[in-house]
Image 1 (tube, rainbow, N blue to C red):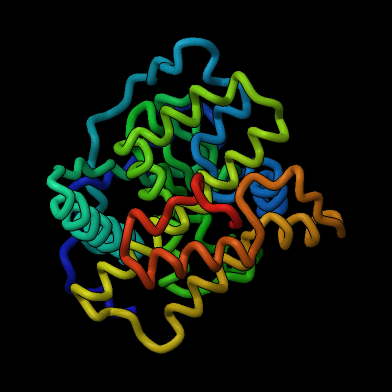
Image 2 (cartoon, rainbow, N blue to C red; image 1 turned 30 degrees about the vertical axis):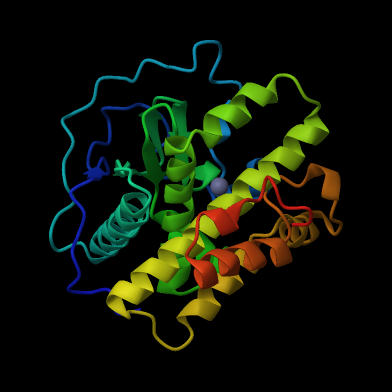
Length: 288
Ligand SMILES: [Zn+2]
């Protein structure tokens, strides 16, 4: 992926140096527990804190006092990569929204280590990257990239970019009101139905990640041989069926919250090939 030299985003907030200002954790979470947590809460969950019951009541949690937001240091290559990918999501979605006569409001992306306060409660690296609708921020501990390539079998820069684009997809769902509609349903349906709904939310975020891939490739021609495959492989490695079989030997479809490997691949490719939000209607789709 030829990302170097492209525009970087101003919307990255670097909290990695602020150790001590927030008391939880540090880097003591083992990779094994990360993988288990990913299976338990879902990889790239939308607001996994909801499932932990930390959102009690109001949906807003007081965010602890923090040092002012800082940008990452210029010589940090990994942060530059994240910032470049985030900028490309801004460009891609700005275009898509503008074509529909709307204005895109980009999310911020927080780099942190171990744990950090969010409007959805305490974000922890064990949850994997996630998006918090309450403060409209994507939270990323970049150690996850190692987990992605070593533990989850999904190496490659484009696989990492897909992860970021998927989280931004949840932001787009919030801007479009989808997140709010789904949240309103949650209290009124069974766990099984909630899981089924969650699958449609997640597959739509995969499809939106595909739209980003479509738009950014058209604008930058930055994909290289094997890049698309690395994202498609990532989508397969983090399918619920695959993760559950890895973890316990069996897959239990009624507990799926993100979709199977085949479904995640299919919806990413639907977005990639069409570049169209309308094509990503996972809620209206008869078959996923
Ligand atoms: Zn997700």
